[in-house]
Image 1 (cartoon, rainbow, N blue to C red):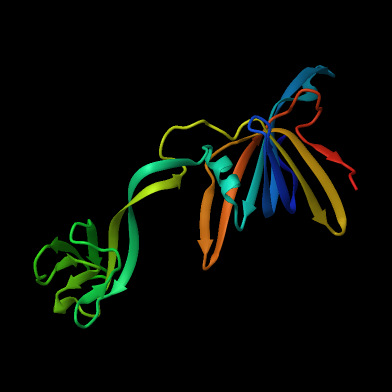
Image 2 (image 1 turned 180 degrees about the vertical axis):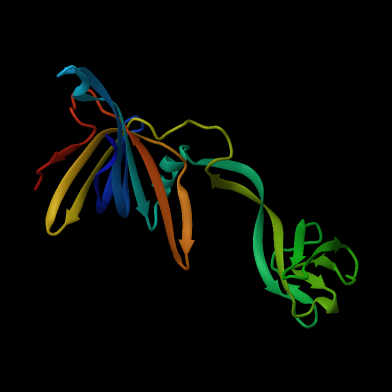
Length: 244
């Protein structure tokens, strides 16, 4: 039987997590459900020759793929499989790109002499800069209060920097192994095509893999993949209904 597409189109997903008593509403999404089956064959003698006389689906897997332009924090938690947590203290690098001024003094609010910072001159002839406490020589940079200081030879060059800053009581996803979420989900959505609505309900699904994040210009996209299971009492893994 191979792989086939059960349905595809655009719509808004309503994802319900009964275990946490939470509902997530997504923005408009591109949606498709594909099914892949392996057939079992019954053979018999027909006219003295062994031939296939019947086939039956032996096993079948169903995958729902949804692509969004933007997602909220509640959907992000669900797709990543972890709930948000508050971390008392965390040091993270913040990235920036700068052009070294003619005087070599680049203002950077919040910088202190103790701030950990790394820098690299970009381009084909690029090189890493060494951080020093005193006046910088060529290939070096200095941290001062609220500034980065470069040697005059670096003037006009593009420099990529990583500044390590410590944050207190910030919200994160993915730092520690917390309660796993993303299984036992119910998904409901409506597809629109040619003025016809198809209301589809998936009674049992789980997040199959981590989401994929992409950006084209200023437009971002997130692709999520769900494994769809056939729930007890349902002849199919999804239900198509007429709902006004």
